[in-house]
Length: 99
Image (tube, rainbow, N blue to C red):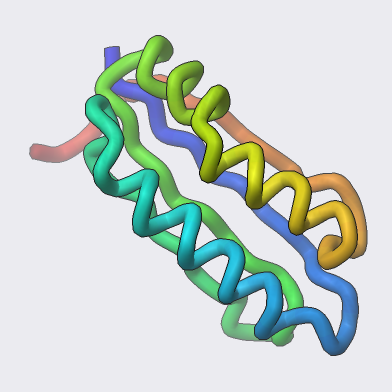
């Protein structure tokens, strides 16, 4: 069953560009993982410091493989100094999805 993950990361003031740089490296590598259908980074429109990862995986095993990847772990290490708080991560399963 597909899994949609949405993660919200609030970044400390003045650390936005460093976070974007680290997140882009993770996003590019994540898009090449087997089982990743899409992996996008968004920035909240009302405010400069909250970022949203919009991810879609073929199944729970693909999510677990992503979380075990070196690039995901590297983003976690970088985020320790850049994030204002722990990220909010929501994993969901489809109920009524078009396409």
